[in-house]
Length: 392
Image: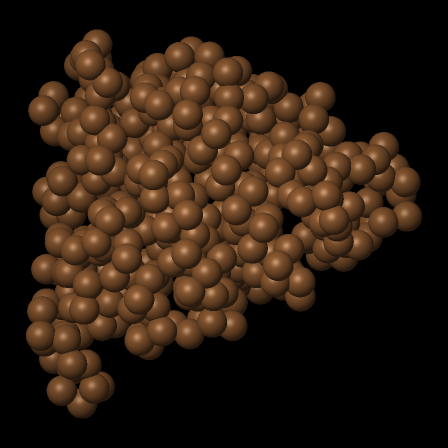
């Protein structure tokens, strides 16, 4: 049956491409020539964001301090034919304006039938982890704050019913992270983008007590912790000569690992009100992982020093939400997951997105699902999770 007209699609995972002058407009004068800025490539530069390739002359690239980052619009391929979506844009005029302009984005959302979206960064990586690599910690903090002010001022404020306020944190410093939450506390933040596995970035893991002060703040303020695929800086690579299709197929294993970490960590025992959204990981694998985690908890916890007193599946149903673009297996097994644990994502402007046909694709995927459950999955679960009700 068709998606009912009154149901509004709410995407818990979209992306924006930062306009060229975000940081030049917002950093102190003394840092503007070292902060992120767009330059015309001469062909002599080496890309620091990929694998050290030479940059082609005529490209536009980001420069931060004295390093060049050539992924101008990471996977910003909305509007391209399927045969061309593997080619990332190298200039802003190769992207459709909705990638970087909020007014144009709203128009693209209207075309797609999407009412609201949460927006992840692009240039600083999905959780702002690029800034954590800078030796100049003052610059790193101010770049983080500038991104937050940019998305809150230029995207969320003019369109309060369209964009869910989400920020990044200077996660490399707990005190600065809490200070940043307090700095924007009057902006009604609903989510933070956080690394899915901080240990892979050289920080303490979820199994340590390191993150407790931050998680306590997030739980108290009912701010959702979004763990996006790839924010650990790691992907599943099976072999040096394996095609990229293998890594793309296995993207969900990042979210599986993050969920397993959390279920066997002290996090939810210490912070029972902390809410975690697993972004862009799919959901079809969840029933199997919960079954395996519970079996491990039952049979192996006594000799594996697992001290949790709550079954992993119970922690999942209290604290974790999954999301998907198209996942018919997950939809068919929604009751094994929990209908209230499922949310939908558009992933505009990335290659997995079905823009501008999201409502059509959702209708086809949910054709056997009762209307009340469809509404929960594509709208009301996200609205409740992110405290983002419809504007009357």
